[in-house]
Image (cartoon, rainbow, N blue to C red):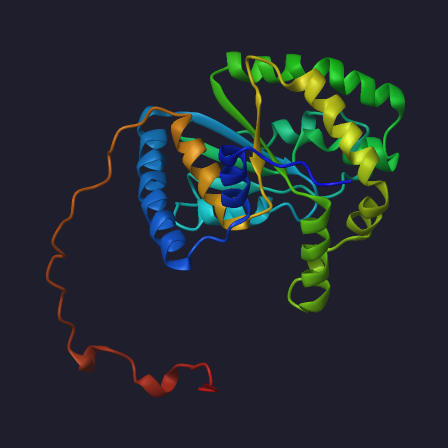
Length: 276
């Protein structure tokens, strides 16, 4: 059966989606976005905003890489990452959202959740880590919980990173081949390969219940990592109206001169060996 021919415009979009970005162009655009992220950071501090950004998606979809690109130029006291591990026995007895609430931002802060309370709707649901009743209760209460956060003054933004099975397989293999990246693959990640369709169904059901007007999901096409990063950061910047409050350039004051005789002998200090 012959492949369906795409219209010229659709074919262009498809080609652009899969075409690799030139490294120089990527670095240049990322540098521009970093400047804007610093402006956003200063605005959040100045206006005492409370911002929560959720990053969800399949394993190896590129969430962590995007989060790292956002935070690498920002003050960790203003913008912090929350990546919670498996809940403790005590946390399992708490109200489900309780351990996430403890990490919500105060005024003048932005928190990036590398996976969030949506674990229950996808991972826990597919892997059988919660009961069906707990799962259904989550779908009922999550929109109400998020509306409560928004009414309290929190700006809540949700991203789903979408990756194809072919690209995920490629990234999994790259992690296996690279000793510095094998830690990124857990037993759950490997089992998720066997449950591709279950994950897809869980994601669709989650969207049906939690993609609400007050707090919609934004899907990031992530087969191309560099495009995904630029597109996500650009969209994040568009979600908050901010002004440029970047401190103006200033001159360094003259350094105080201290006579060497007032310093302890250099031999009294322990230095790191010069291996390189």
